[in-house]
Length: 125
Image (cartoon, rainbow, N blue to C red; front, side, top):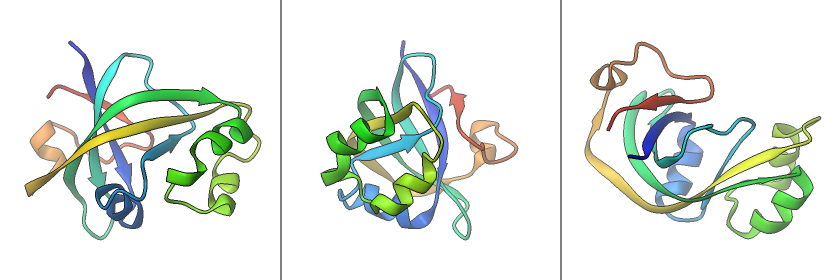
């Protein structure tokens, strides 16, 4: 069975994932295990788990190649992207599919997690 990961995302990006303008979630590190979806923890001031996004694909390319392939659906500026991947040889992007917004946001405690992850944490669904 595929696993899920929980990741922290700031409110601006969460909004763009939910409204469909951001179809890729960029990361410096990707999960080693095969994962089916991302559980989205919206950072301050919300501090709640608000949605889950299906993962269609995981891309691993140089930052330049990844941007060329994903820029139209990035939901972020090139400047923000370049700063994020500065001095990196490899960049990762989760291509997002269906997004399910929770009717009632959940807490980290609901998943047995004590603090918001810096990169990601595996969770049992």
